[in-house]
Length: 327
Figure 1 (tube, one colour):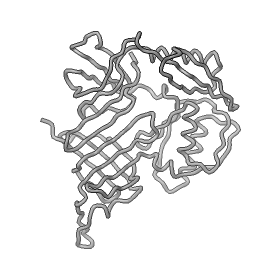
Figure 2 (cartoon, one colour):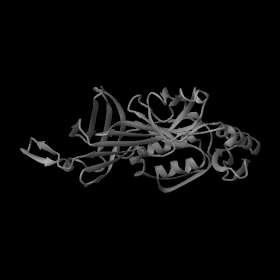
Figure 3 (spheres, helix red, strand yellow):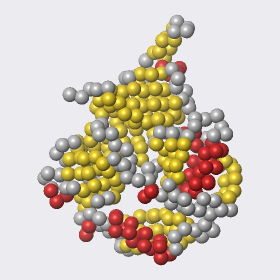
Figure 4 (cartoon, one colour):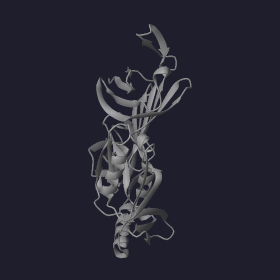
């Protein structure tokens, strides 16, 4: 029998191995990974200097560093690193947290580029960030392309990253490292095996055949001069998917859109499933699904898009939202 284990640090003083509940949501589509820590409000902390005990809320403030490690039988994995964004003084108390995007939301920049590469822009943003008294970060840019002109007038760094996403470049943190680039360039993560008769606890998955899938893809290419090219491919009455690309010709754009349409129209599972706390899964990892009752649906692999982790009195669970099939 597995025994739940946890280690949580908040600020410089608080370290504890108990919690009512932890919820973490992490995904490459969203800018900010978030966590909620729920603990009893009546917990007190001994202030050895003053010789008294004070409520735990007195030791938690906005911006405090947060580390969450979870596991079984003392085998812990770092599930979240970030900062306190808000404390809800309810009963029980809920501590809201955000990853390092918390600080990028609070640093503003003002500069214009007539033409700049993605790497040079991110380098500039990180350099401006490091002029402030905030935790150090690293960065990795996976695309070397020029993004043309960009104007920044007293805007937060995350607003700039949001503009880049409109142009097809995604951003997310792993620990204190910022990744920026095309989603397809982020690489493939660890492969995990999941079975409907073994470690899949519940699911809202729907298996759809290729012939049943109808999609319309609207693809836009953003040119360095600010102009846009748009093409549409697929089924006129299908579910529309909007995709963003950068600096592709109309012919190249149509080719990419048709390739994406083929990927979308591959039959397979849509939705999410819930499993145990192990294995440790991150977005971008591969989920290989097997089903002994429906062998024709077995040996299919999907990329994990979003991971929702829940830990506490009800156990340790992960809900994994699947992306498109990758093999």
